[in-house]
Length: 135
Image 1 (tube, rainbow, N blue to C red):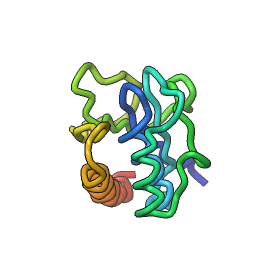
Image 2: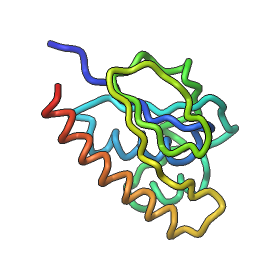
Image 3: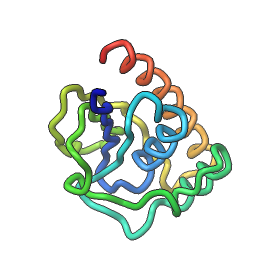
């Protein structure tokens, strides 16, 4: 059996978009790849607005399933997805890299978090199809 494809969702603080992507991926794409999230810095806790929206939409409590992690805390990965850092995105070696260019919903209305989660879900489903056809 071959080793599973590992995908890292990366942003600077690993507290919102990348955490949402990790949670959604584990729910809808675990049959295709292992999902991780990480950043160059961490926050004491995951963005609680993101936690509430992921719980509401996907019934996943990120406070129980995930923590804010540094890039050095995750294993080597095959695919790196940067979330749209608006600064220099963290570097992590990989076979494939792409940027999803997502706006950070932190500090915005709940609707922005919902919109971001739905965009992430669509992008994960697309990535899942591409991974299945590429590897």
